[in-house]
Image 1 (tube, rainbow, N blue to C red):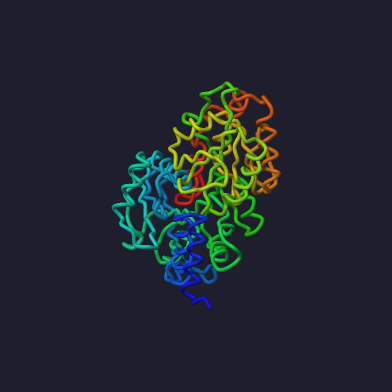
Image 2 (tube, rainbow, N blue to C red):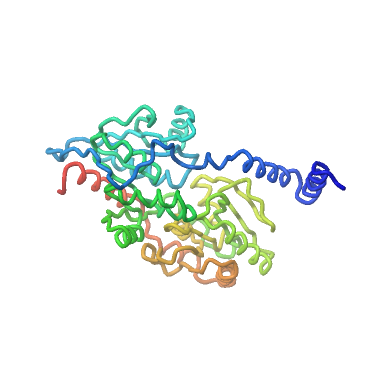
Length: 406
């Protein structure tokens, strides 16, 4: 009879032989994760920061009488990681408010009590145009002219400080309940749309959804593309043989597993094609691929210019990836929410149901044809189609909320 300890040792040895040290370490970590109840750390809010739309009474000051006088606007963020795409959009909006002559203050909500100076250094390094002072939510929210919540948990933080007299706005980039299974976090994220904040959505799809499901009228900031960075540099289709995928296995809305399986099928059909992934240097794939890890926008533009096609997975809102691919002459295969069509109407997009074979079919069809060429694809994205319009929408929403309609 084999003892429990001996049996576990044999199992560990088999895993080590089959999957190597990394695979064994992953299994040990998984066991420890569950035995130590580490999942408790994944809840995104402290208990006292959870608000409830029922009976919520917010302190709201009167409108400011003098339109045109500078405002002070607080922005509540969770701490950004280097190059975070979601934070990049938030900072674009903040920069637009600053450019309009208003003062901005960033309040960071760190559930895990991280170092404020370290978080600020990330902001200064990766978003150098941001001038805003950086504070911690733990130090208290000052009674500023307005605050902008930027994610569901920061909306709870802002609502739970109901006695702070301020105008409250909510920048909605995704339908964030979809980040979670149907359960507590889904319900708490959904409740933020009932808080009564003025919502500004990135794209029309989200505005339509909020109106239909929650009776919320939202301002719309249209999607943009930084065409000074994402642009065509390789017009020769013959020099493009690769396909590319934004691989983020720990971000469910990015559909990593479906995209990976699609590429596995594509590699079986087209083994001579180079497969590129970016976004996470730790990703391991069951087929040959070049993993570029995290890339700056300039390096990402260079990568897109070596590729004929790419996969853009998103299940919660339109990703920025497909337009940036198009601007570089690569044809994106989109998969996720079909309603995204309401925000992006481009003749070179390829839509596929989110199954591996359907996505692989579209990739194969693209690489098998010389048409459309990279120049035609890139030309479908209007030069100068930047984020200025979205920034203007954000500024208008803040000013109208504080001063009253113009």
